[in-house]
Image (cartoon, rainbow, N blue to C red; front, top):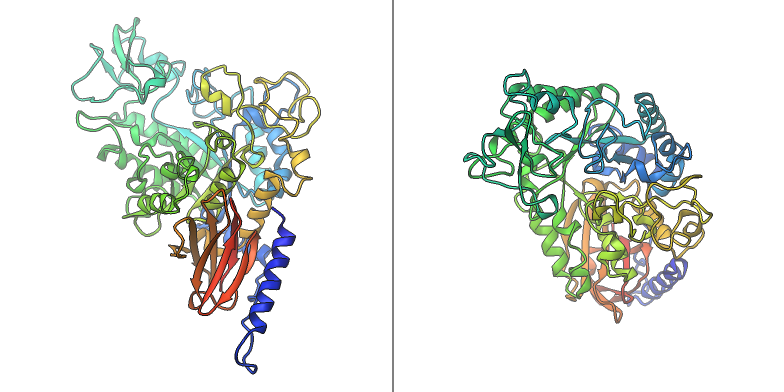
Length: 549
């Protein structure tokens, strides 16, 4: 994609359109809109309680981002050293996958101490240093909070499983039989096994777990558990973290008739939100276990989650982008927002630590993951970029815990041996083609995926419409072209994407919908005035972002 050529083509087309007026005394339509100081606007938008609406988040697996001591394992000091590069990319906030001590039965999602730091990653002092360094750059730090379960190596579970009369005997879910009539659910999915009850020989009872057997579920019907977990959240808030991504939060409490977001779970979430509201400018995002809609996680829009992931688009975008119908994308984005309360903010992804790399979901067709990322970064919601997606990182081939390790290979920063990640042996081998898909190589190539991400993030930065504006799907008269209109802060933008991979496609928009001529901010397009419509032609596999007002 040659951006300078596209911009030149656009200016020539617009000049021709302006000179063809039937009225020689008429003023030509404006090709430029009043411009704001985007750096100042970004600073304003990223300050205050609504900062999360305008931030670009970056999901970090600390273990795989940067090793600072040569042991092959990424760590917090290593992450601190990479903050300049992440900020230069356009990142405003970090979401760290679990950094607490762990038995590593589920890559850190089996927590063995809620208020410590995994020694592989550093210390509490290192975490404090990260928060301080990020804040000095105007960046935020959000931690993964795993509340549904702990590790079976957690002190709480060791005490609870010792016998039936100890002070924590009722902190987990126990049964004399491998079932209970008041719990109508099993493991979350087949990956975690077929049995949700495991026998504790010491206690001679079975404990319940939605995930691996090493991850026993906490009993949230016990007020002491509620207090202890809220205290853990308070511990991190007191250290200055900016909020939490809450792992499988909808599964906290089970019943005979429901296992996801039942009233008792929602009541706990409201307590957690009330805790966050005691601290200025904090936010939390829900990992929804409902792939159709995240609406239940928002409550009234102000008493539960600030954000919730839209996985209906984020995990399944590969299917519509393999076709040519724009409605397959717009329908999915519209359906997830239906009945959402005022104030609800979706979190948008095209990948994460739980699903295949975008490269795989797109079946190696480059334009598919780029167009999906374009929609992610221009649609209504807060974008979360999984580390390495900005490089089109390939999947790995090795696993230590389970197959999800394929998308958790170390981050390649340079093309040299060790790829700038480590001077030792990496804990997990690098993905294929790391000598090509690394920051050093891609940052010097204008056509690279890295340059694509950096350019698009720069184009949307400091523009209020993308973080908090309205979104309307506009009929461009072509079912193969998706047109998103974003409006906010007194400005309007058009994001235009073709679903066709074989030929250019044209959309036509009424002149009344565009104040003056559309001004190209990013992408490749040809624009012409045709009577009372603007004709926008997008190359095959292409996209373009315009300022419309």
